[in-house]
Each structure stands twice: as structure tokens, then as C-alpha cells.
Image (cartoon, rainbow, N blue to C red; front, side, top):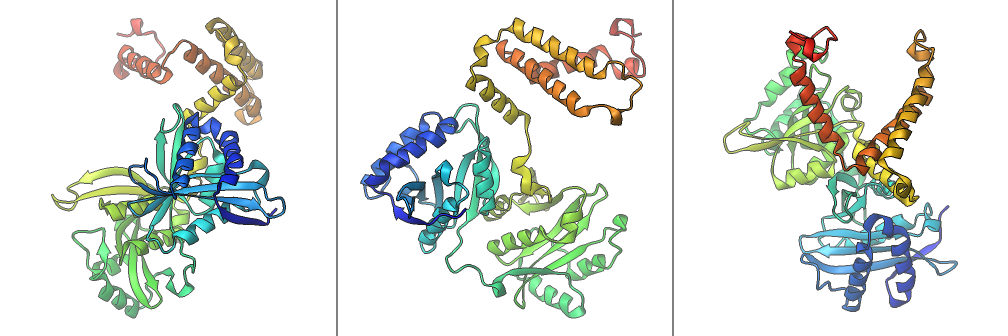
Length: 448
């Protein structure tokens, strides 16, 4: 439930409580680096917030959230202003007993208000990927996941890189928001035509608006005719951009042409794209070719699009474009499971309970065989049972046990499982060429 808090500049009276937050909440994510960072912040605060260590840092600013009722420290935020016109959160910590009470949100709002007239364009941070509550908090606050960085602060851990634009204290007026609308009348198309020549575009050799209009009049379900779906972006009565969409045979959707008046408007247009029917209902991914210019790249990263490829010479010998893609499922991308993350978490479970000191290759191999036997029991006398009638939950649990013991055995023997699997697959392909092995089960020595 909400907590009555006040935000105060960091002072020496807060040091002990903030140090406890560092130790209690960051130790598992940063090893000992967080304590060195705490000492660095104390030095900067004693030096009127000037950071003499950071190569690109100008000021380290710390604020605390204090519970009005108990005067206890409920949260801490330090942000460092960079000479490039950006700011980094490093770190934001909320006391576990105060989570869910709005403490982190109040700290961020105080920071935004402080930065609103400083020229800072955006704020970014990094979060240990295993710290799912923190990454979920930042994405709820409008941060976009730009990518990942492994082994950055702690060996074997992966950091998510998140960013969001600075929101000014007065907010955005409704009349200033970008709205996407399909042109319906000749007047709509004429307005689009007049504005297009003054807009930036992802196309070097531009199509005429008459060509785009002709393609937009084709049947949208006739993919072979290359139909176009056009959305014109309006800010009030002004045309400030457009998107020309093209459905593809594989079920994906291409943004074949994009127009924008400036980069902030492009970001708004891409945000609005995520709410149109064609985006939400496409079976595949939505992709676009965009010039590899720094301001455009920043917009695509901020919106969370993935860079699939860098392609030189698409439209001219002097241009390089990037193919970017996204989908309506990408909002939850940070929650998708990955094997590397699972292996890290499995290691933490084993080492945190000190089970590793009981494990030997022999014990693990015996345990692996025992789990294979339990899997066999789940399937025994069920060869005539259809798959829908099997207890797949129990079978999945046994498969997970087998997988865990298999990988723990590989770790103890320092075997690269992925490399070993590819090596074995290559040998299989050599021993069993398709021309000789296709359609039979004979051993390689019997193939002729």
C-alpha cells in the first residue's frame, strides 16, 4: 500500500542506512563492486557532488526516500550526470519491506523534475537479468530494454541495458500528441503529398505519393499484388509523418516506407504503430530498413526494436541501412527464458545450498541413470496410450531432472556441452551422409 514519504538530499546521517541497503540488496548481483561504488559516491558527495574519478561523469547526485511516520530510510537513488547530456541511475534501491508502496516511483519523479531544465535527454541504467523484480519495475516506468551485456559487473552474470527519455514536469498536452490515421479522402492524400517532400524518410529513392496511393487501393488480402496499408501521422492538423505497411507472404509485416519530421516524432510514430490492428494481429514480426544514423539508431533502440542485420549498398553505394524488427510479443521480451540464464540460476541454487561439495562425477552419473529410470516408469506399459492421455507434467519434471544432472556432470568434468554437441553432430553427418542413410536405420559401417 502507498507510503507517506519525503525525498531528501543524501546527507551523512543517511550513510549507515544506505550502506545497509547496498549490502542487503546488491551483494548477489555485483560481488564486491557495489561496496567500492558506495565509497566512490561518498567521496563525490563530500566533494560537492563533483566526481573526480568518472571519465565522463560530471556530478553524482544522491537522494533518499524517508518514511514520514518512522523517519527511516525506505529507498535510495543515485544518478550521475554525464557530459554527453545523459544521466545514469547507479543505483536505485528500495528497502524490501517498503516495496510496492511507490517509493521507487517517487524517487524517479524527483529525478525527472530535477533534470527537466538541465538539457539531459535521456536516462539509462543496467540491471542484473536475474533481478527480475528490478527489470519489471523499470519497464513499468517506461524504460525500454536496449540490449544485454555479459560479465559487466560480475563474472557469469548478464546486465540488461535500459533507457527512457526524460519527461518534463509539465507533461505532454493531448493536442501535441501524434495520432495515426488512414487517409480516406482526396484531401487527406493531398495533405500527405504536400507534407511528404519536407519530411525525412528511410528511402533514398522515394516513391511518389501517387504510387503509394495506388498500392493502398489494392485488396489488402491479396499479398501477391503488393498492397500497402498507409497511416498518416498528425499532430493537431499538421502532417508530421507516415508509415507505409506491406503484408508479407510469411505472415510478417514490413514498414516499407517511413516519414518523420524529427526524431522525437519518429519515436512517437513507432509507439503509436504498436496499437494499430495490423501490428497487433500479424502472425510474424514487423520489420523496417532504416538508415544507420546515430539519431535514428537511438530511436529504434529506445523503442525496443532489434537490429537483425546491417546492410550496405541497398539503395546506393554510399548508404548503409539496418534491418530492425519487433512484434506485439516483445513487450514481455525480458521475461522470456534463455538457457544461459537458467544455467546461471541452477549454479546459484547448487552453490547457495553447498550441494556442490557432495557431488562427484560418479554420484552425478548414478543420479542421472536413476532419473532416466524414473522417466521410463512414467512411460512403462503406455506404448498404446495416446500423447494427450500421458501425464506430460510428470514427464516434464523427470526430463528437467535429467537435464540438471547432465549439465552438472558436464560442469564437474569441465566439458563444453554445446561445443561437444556440435562436434558430435558433425561426426554424425560425416558417418551418415544423406544419400546413403536416408530412410533406413543401418549402422554407418553397413552403409554402401
